Figure 1 (cartoon, rainbow, N blue to C red):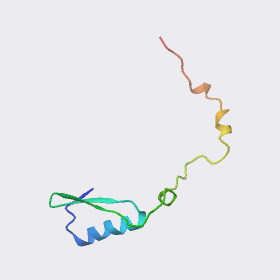
Figure 2: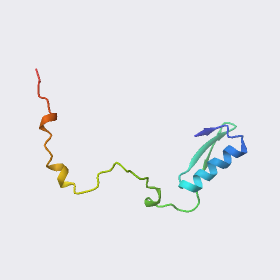
Figure 3: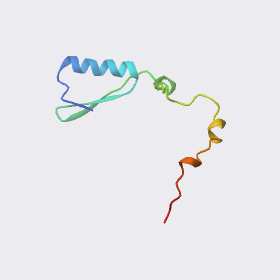
Figure 4: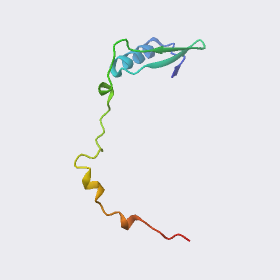
Length: 76
């Protein structure tokens, strides 16, 4: 939420961000909370963010990894 968005260029940048991402923004002005929301529908796939560190490959390869060297069972 952005408070006291009295600067027109700041408000314009918020509106541009809402249009670019499709995600609603909240501002506070004179003690009132306002929402700026896009009218057009942006689907879930349109809001996806890239995850370059995600595992790409066969998930079965992860199941059969040997994790025993990381387990310490020195319980009292």
